[in-house]
Image (cartoon, rainbow, N blue to C red):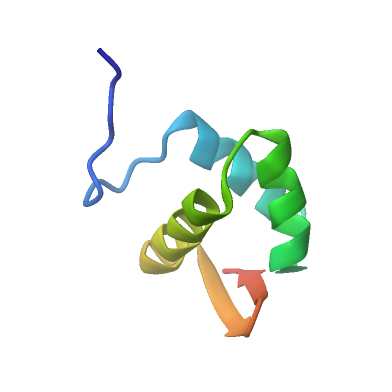
Amino acid sequence: MLNRISKTSKKLNTTQTSLYNWIETKKVFKRAEISKQAQLLGLKDRTLSDILKRFIKLELIEKVSHGVYKKR
């Protein structure tokens, strides 16, 4: 059985951690840029949307404008 992290948990799973490590190398990034990285990890677009929403909720990133994010 897989170890799942609940949606209310503040911990990141391995996929989320690898995406966040990529974000840390950028100051501002566009959705298209992180989408390419997510495809390399085998993530679908909807999953990426959920991860970005989670990062915003955990205050790891901030949405600047439509499709543009920055690291906090």
